[in-house]
Structures are given as structure tokens and as C-alpha cells.
Length: 162
Length: 292
Image (cartoon, rainbow over all chains, first blue to last red; front, side):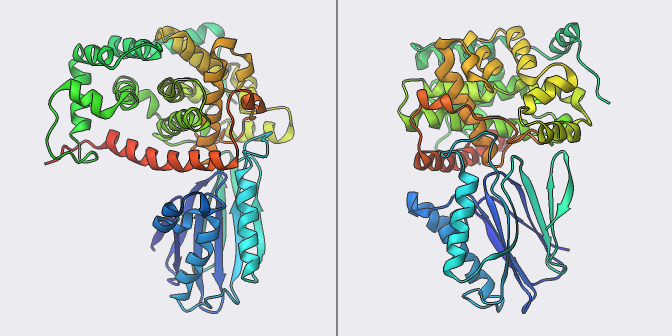
């Protein structure tokens, strides 16, 4: 079994049923997960910030870092596996986007990430069928390509599924 | 069921932790002074053969990719800069403490050091990018040391993470600091302060360690520094580098705005720099092999 580990700003996709895709400790970052039943492919991006205009060089070097560049990059990656390049038929799930307690607007990066991602997905006519967003805790997310089952974990909490 | 730490027991725990070396202690004192110079650091490093060797190893490591080897302390200190020197000194003499597995927080070994390094870089960047009148070097050092208390109480918290998480979920007024206090009688800032005093750290660093979750309680003179670390700590956690079960479970004091002008764009830029600098710094500190 292969394990594809995604760091901050990474994205990846697989149609190998032996693979798991995993990303560790999402704080305010959001994991976007694409599931394509047609090709039995799974894709994931670990998005750190909402908008690439603050650092275009970084967006070129690591498109998965920003919501507005990560979604097209992940769709292009999925298209290589035979998925529709505009995301038709792809199911979307979202996890992460936490915030520290009693935070103010400036520090609500988790919320801004989730909003930016949803806005970009809408521009493709896509919407999340399930989400586990917000709260005051970090999440580690893992998905098996074969079962398409998402498992979340957080220190001090029992694992749960999405 | 976790066991409470009695007041006299805390002193025993502190006494069981190795002292930092005299040169590291002196280095922290010198670098906390606003008017210190690079030569003060060079002179001090030269008195410690182990620290000198470690610094030369880091500067000549593959991470820096120098064409010509650096063999003099003067050049190495000047090339690496104060923040790297302080990181090397702390890691060299208290590395065991920082790399300890924090089982009480369900965090693996090394998580504390990574969190502290990111909090240090973030605190420094908050100061630089907001244009605050505060030493970025001092904010970095304070960020590096702010959570040392967790290494002291972690063993006592073993098995308590689910209970701590549940306590916070069911009581809006509680954060993880209050949960620690309720569970073992001592929170990590109190334990950290005791260790900082035993290590004879300068008063501003002791204050940061004690009040980084409640900066408004710090002495007024050190408050901007404490707020810088308060923000650095939060930024490290929201960036996904916490220390396990307590990550994100602290309150943000909005009065940081009295000292630092930060908007969403500045915060995003700080987070970008933290990612880049953290990778660079951790690579150079962990690189044991010298460039051939």
C-alpha cells in the first residue's frame, strides 16, 4: 500500500486503490478532497491561504498553497487521471479551517480559507457534499483511494469519519 | 487519573532538569540587552569550545552551501546572525528538553522544538512587518523559549488529553491553560517560569514565559514583547504546528492591536515568511553533515 503524504501547499491525486492520501495537522489550513466515482480517483490539496495575489512567485512555485491557484491545479492533476477537467461529476469534501479561541476577524484565516475555496468551487459549478470545518482544534486527514473513506484525527479526540 | 503536582514537587522537577550552560545563559542575557553588539556575542562564543564547534559545523553544513569553508568564529557569527546563534546555543544545551515526546499532550518528540522555532520566527516577523519599536532578535529568542514549561508537566498530564479537551468543550470560559491547572494543579507557564528562574534567564524572558497566554498581566515595560510572542504562538498553531492536544485551544487577546498594526494581508505575509524561514532554519540546524 502506498501512502501519499501532502505537506502545506501540496496537492496530489491517485487512482491506485492501494494508495492512501494523508495530510497532517491542519490548523487554519483547509484540505480540499475531490472524489471522482467515474474514474475512481481521489485528489487532495492542503491549502494555507485564500488569495495568491499577495505573493505571485510563491503561487507559481507552489500553486497548492493558495485557494485560487490550488483548485485549478488539483483539477488539472485529476484530469490527467481521466476526470473531467471542469470537475463535472466530481464530489467535493472539505476539512480543516480551524481558528484559535475568541479570535478576531484578522486572525480568522480558517474561515477566510473556507470561504475563498467555496467561492472558487462555485465558479466551476462545484459544491461540497460534506464538510468538517472550523472549531478550535487541528485535524489530520487521511483517505483511502479504494474506499473513498475520509478519517480525521485530532490529539485528545477519538477518530471520526466524513 | 492524573496526579496533582504539589508546590514543593515543582521545585524538585525543576531541579531534575539539567542547567543550561553558563555560556548559553550569558548569551541570553547579552542578547536581551538593547545596546549589545555582535562582538559581544563573538567574544562569548569563543569561550565555549562546544558551542564554537557546533556553530562552525552548522555554517559549513550543506544547508548553507558555502564555496569556501568558514573557520573563524567572527565570520561564522556574522554570517549566521544572532537568531541562528541563539537557536544553536539553546538546542545544544537544552535539546533533550525540546525534543522530548510530550505524551501528556499526545505530541511526538520534536513537536515542541518545531512549534517554538515557528513561534520565534512568527514573533520576529510580527515585530518587523508591523513596524513596531521592539527588537526582532529579542522577540525571536523569547518565542524560542516561551513553552519550556510543557516539557516539565507533560509526564504528569499523561493520559489526560481527552479529559482536558472535554473540559474545554463543555466550559466556554476554559482554555487549555485552565485545564492544565485543574488537572495537575500547575499550568505550563507557571512551570516554565520556575525553570526560567532556575536558569537565571533575564527578566523579560521570564515574563514572556509566564504571561504569553495572558499578556495583559505582564509588567507594562515588557508587554509589547509578551504580545509579540502571544501572536507568534497563535500563528505557529494556526499554521498547523502546535504541540498536540492543546493546539488552538487558547484565547487570542485582541489588545495586541494596541502594540501591533496587523491586518489580514500582513498576517498572510507573516505566515508565508514563517513557512519559508522555518524550512531553511530547521534544515541548517538539523544538518549534521558538512559540505564536502
